[in-house]
Image (cartoon, rainbow, N blue to C red):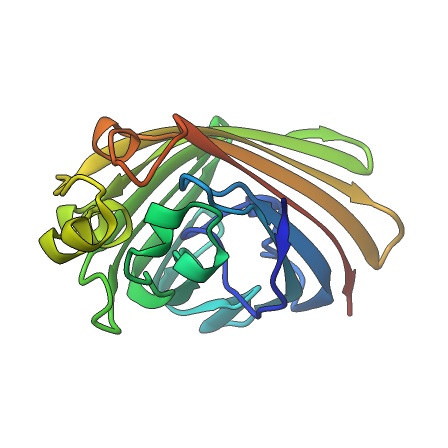
Length: 249
């Protein structure tokens, strides 16, 4: 069963889904919905409504609930200090299995760090290094992606390939099982290390008019072994889809 949660959440990961980021236009507003497959045993997939709010200034930028301050910006390079929310969480009340209901809750958090984007004729490289600032996971993530944009008139297609590094603390918070959780639930104690999880993504955008734009983006992430082997997890990977429309002023 899919579970619908009306929450204001940020991007699923740093620099996620480039099709929803506006770099040339000063302000775009719209609405979107994210479908996120649950990685957990007995977990329920989520549909998350997210406002599209893209602003591009000389020094500051804001893209669908993540924002930053440019340290370096020219026609090919953008380096910025970045703050974003991470909607990853685990709520035992939403789980269908008795043993999983006995685990502790894993909360969403706020992450801060640096992001960099380089645009060239041969493609786009983007990367982000961020850490938890709310003392929830005390973890870090590093995202590295290569994309190439194809233009077909009003329609554009941007496939990409990348990998996400999760620190050991990040994995232990979201996928580990502590001794007291194991004693309470009967699930084996588990203490994962850091992981690299490769992914592929596809971003499609269609210019409906001079002001209106429709976008569809998808990503499939193949879990690293220490995530996949967690007794909390019953999948080899996770699929996420994001679709929406926006109006540029």
